[in-house]
Amino acid sequence: MENLISELKEKIIETLYLEDVHKEDIDEDAPLVGGDLGIDSIDVLELVMMIETEYSVIIDNKELGEKVFSSLRALAEYIQTNRPQV
Amino acid sequence: MKFKLIYPKWSKMERQTEFHLPPHGPIVFAASLPEDVDVEFTDENVEPIDFEDPVDFIGISMMLTIQVKRGLQIADIFRKKGVKVIFGGIATMLHAEEVMQHADAVFLGEAEGRMTEVFNDFKNNRLRKVYDYLNEQPPIEMVGTARRDILNRDLYNYKGIQMVDLVHASRGCRFNCFPCAVAYLGGRQFRPRPIDKAIAEMASIDNNRLFIVDNSLAQDTQWEMDLFAEMIPLKKKWCSHPIEDNPKVLDLAAQAGAWYVYQAVFDTSQYIRDRIRRYHDHGIGVEGTILLGLDTHTEDFIKELIDFLLEIELDLAEFTVLTPFPHTRAFEKLQAEDRIFTYDWDKYTADQVVFRPKHMSAERLGELLSYAWDSFYKNESQQLKMSRLYQKVIAKEKADNSYTPRKRELARQAFGQKLN
Image 1: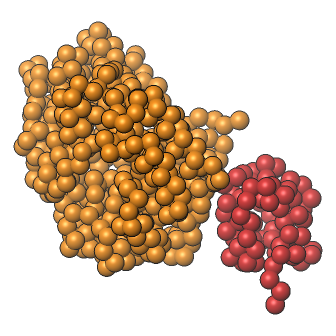
Image 2 (image 1 turned 90 degrees about the horizontal axis):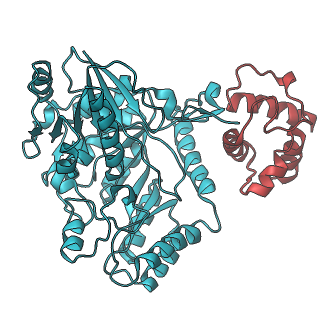
Image 3 (image 1 turned 180 degrees about the vertical axis):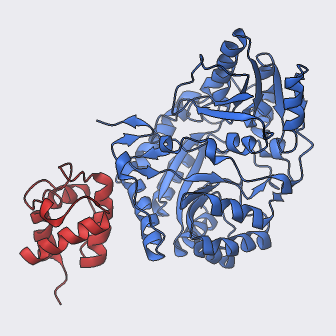
């Protein structure tokens, strides 16, 4: 799980071109959206696409999105549980 | 000489998500101005007009009938101060006689090659009341690259996302559709721009997303295919009015970056069903433009049409009611039948009924318009459907490495206004 969280931090910074944010700035238990990182609903659209491409996990409704993006840890847990097993 | 060019504001349709695109008419017009004219542009939809700013000459550019009353008010204010006002643009041509009563001059027609004369007349204090070139279109080769430098680009930005830039590759239209004024305005002869000029203009635009505003690209197959072929290396992503229903053309359009089209859906036929499917098969989204209130439209038909729109999986839909704009076949017919009950141009919003429909009351048509919006977006909101379409363009851009991130410093602004 910690590896996935670390990997997600990198991918979020890369996907959203967060130039002034470093991995250690992201608190995995803090709200991911609307918090200090400045991530908003438009960023969520891009993160949804990244998660589908990178992990084959689809987040396709608002209620699920709110739950999954409540924190980075929640996101990692959701991906871990729902990604196809190889 | 300081020339202030103004684009009057108007109220957006009530049910449509409000957004502001950079206007096209004023920047095309500005490209035709003599070099010694210092032009300053104000789009009143996104910024207030500074009536105290000292200027030599005012130009008011109007595209829509719902800009006319406001345009006339603005002219009255400047003329009271002794500043001369000239009007131009589509709505000026459609409402010329009324506009003339509030103007020092009106310009009718296409501006290329004409502005040196107009500005010389202004400087020599011999401005004519009317410059009527409506039926004397300049050679299409004279159309230059629009003056996008006069736009304040950050005002056309939503949370850091730059709105599409508007560009045109042709004028005129060989069709003469019932509700449309293009036959009157631009003539029924399709006039494509030289492809190299249109391509050079597109390439010059500092935006990967465009709206090709031509009336319909489906006018001349070879020209359309040649245009798309030349567009491929630009890697632009674009929306447009209809693209010809031909697999070779659609394939080239997709390669050239077609993102989505505005496609009229006027019946529930297999043809329309297949037409939409063929766009989708080529990865091109479809925003249906649905006009309600034609004489063939009964209440049952309108309800069937909405069900049909959901079945064919349109990406978005925009509903309007038939509005008889002057110099359209719709206006001539409804006026001749004494069915237009108001000429208050502020009501010509396309979401207010201004005529008596054949099969129902005006009020009932208004209710069915609301029903259409509600039904189409019942299971998936407009916002959600727009998000999906936005994701499509991002996916296309990431696939060919043309994606550029949004301006994060504008993430808390919408069209120049700070968001909470």
